[in-house]
Amino acid sequence: MKYMFDTVNIKTIKDLSEIFPIEGITSNPSIVKKEGKIDFFKHFREIRKIIGMDKTLHIQVTAKDCEGMLKEAKAILDNVDNKVSIKIPVNEEGLKAIRILKSKGISVTATAIYTKAQGLFAMEAGADFIAPYFNRMENMDIDPREVITTFANMIEKYNYPTKILAASFKNIGQVNDAFECGAQTATVAPEILQTALRMPAIQKAVDDFTTDWETIFGKVSIADL
Ligand code: E4P
Image (tube, rainbow, N blue to C red; front, side, top):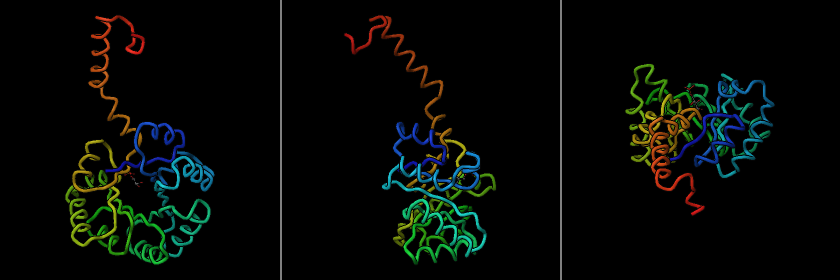
């Protein structure tokens, strides 16, 4: 069970890394858009410096055809580093690109997955990660729990090396469900992780314990006893 951060905000990545065990960083063009017109490759090199080479960094192509996807993949690998996992949407052009990248030993994250068929095609094409879009599936009345369970079963049954990197969450309950269904990894927006630990009930428990302590000992820290 591993968490990735679905953000490219440098400060957020630094801050969250001190709280959560980070497995990697995922991005897509909409996530990049939130940072404005960044110096694209430099920004990702900076992220790599923060997370280190042993974590995974997932960067998505924007081209719509296979040739363009391959050119962009090369630019990313040349200008960021050759360990980046290239995110490719699973459609016809994407599947062609995934096969070619895998034949060259490049790490691939198959993304924009809404259906079982897309995930299975990507697994068969050799994708290292498949990213089922949990919340977007629910919005379309597709059951993401069933889809992720099928992926997990197929990976186990046929011994695929592919990992499920569940994505597109709107709350922490969905993240927990994805793990229960067999996702090894989930990429989560920082706000969702923070909200999960900022429930008023948690703060109230902490405040009540402090009040009880102070009733007996006053405002003295255990460290100063
Ligand atoms: C991963 O990086 C996915 O692209 C991302 O989780 C999609 O999230 P969204 O459905 O909130 O756009």
